[in-house]
Structure formats: structure tokens, C-alpha cells
Picture 1 (tube, rainbow, N blue to C red):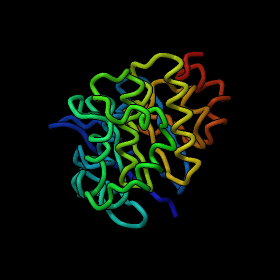
Picture 2 (cartoon, rainbow, N blue to C red; picture 1 turned 180 degrees about the vertical axis):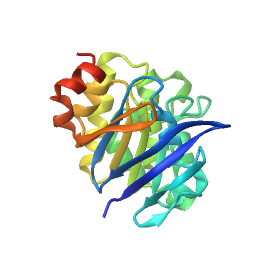
Picture 3 (cartoon, rainbow, N blue to C red; picture 1 turned 120 degrees about the horizontal axis):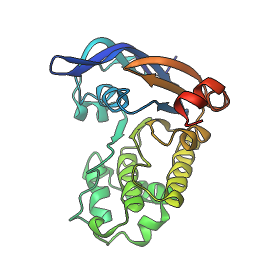
Picture 4 (cartoon, one colour; picture 1 turned 30 degrees about the horizontal axis):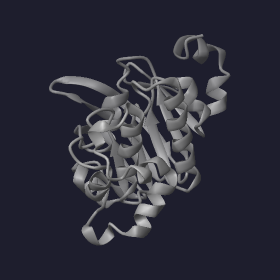
Length: 234
């Protein structure tokens, strides 16, 4: 059984339908990437899965539980975490204070949980008293991911984790995503940096004009001539 299953999801904004019956699955421990051109509806799909945008029809289930109508704060209670593309840290707070806000409660903000998160992001431990607003873009992205991991999620949703980062930092972020997946936490991300994301993924989906185009193993997508030409820049 899939950990996350979206079945024939339709959503949008106001009277404008953006997602036209999209279906996808994420299995336990998988890293799955959704790619597609600008305007394909990737961010809208991600926000719909996490309850930030209403699902007009279809369903979203997680570990067999119907989450279709839940609010984002209720999603976290079901062991899902979401990292938005921007405005994903509190710049006036320290790294440690940001992580404290990510914990479900003060009782769960434990040295053991912090150590587990810092194992993925040692640079954050070194700078835990530093204000988040003084971090580089890549370091902020790592902090946002670390805060999302404070709830020990079964599934981490990432919206364009490499956006605006330097090439070296892009590679580092994807390596961190793969390492998180290797610990058993499933990851679903949407990405414009499609090639690099797929290289660190198990499976991928191609979304175009709000509809499913392709679902396949990541390495199959990377070697599909038509996909490479249409969606991966040749």
C-alpha cells in the first residue's frame, strides 16, 4: 500500500481549475520528484496535497487515512511536513529557536531529537546561536528542512528546494534529500532543476498543463529521449 496516494485530484484558485485529475503515489522510504514546465501546476499540486489549497474533487490518503479535507496543522499531526519554496524560516530567530518552533511540543524538543537533525546538518549545530537572517540561501534551505524534520515525519514535502541556490549548494541540498530518504523518511519534491533532482530520486512524475504525462523510475525518465527533449532541456 502506498504511504501517500493522490487519486484524481482536482484543484485551483477561485474559479480557475489548475490541477485536472492528477494521481500519484509515494511509498515508504522513497524519494519521488515531480517535474514539468513553468505553469504546469506543480506548486498548486503540492499545496493541495498539504491542505493549503482546497481539493475540489478526488482524494488524498496517507497511510490509509483520508486527509482530503484537513487543514495544514492537522496534516502535521499525521506525520507529514512541508517546506515551502520561500519565507520558510524566521529570520529574526536563531537556528535553535527556529528548530524549537518545529517541534510538536516543548516536551518533544529533546537533545536526542536535535542530535538526530544535526546529524543531517552539522553546520547548523555549529551555528545554532546564529540568527537565521544572517545565513546564506542554502543554509536557510537546510534550516527549513531541519525544522520540518523536528516532527520526525514519515513524509517530507519539498517545494523547489534548490530554487535560487548556487550550483555547489544545489548539489549539497540534493545530497541531503537523498540522505534523508535513506533513513526511511519518504520525500516528495517538485523541482525545476529536473535532471539533478531525478538523479537523487527513485521515481518521477512529469506534470504538464495540470495533468499527468509520465510516471516512471527516475533513471527511465532521465534516459527517455522524448522527455529529455521536451522537459529536460535536451
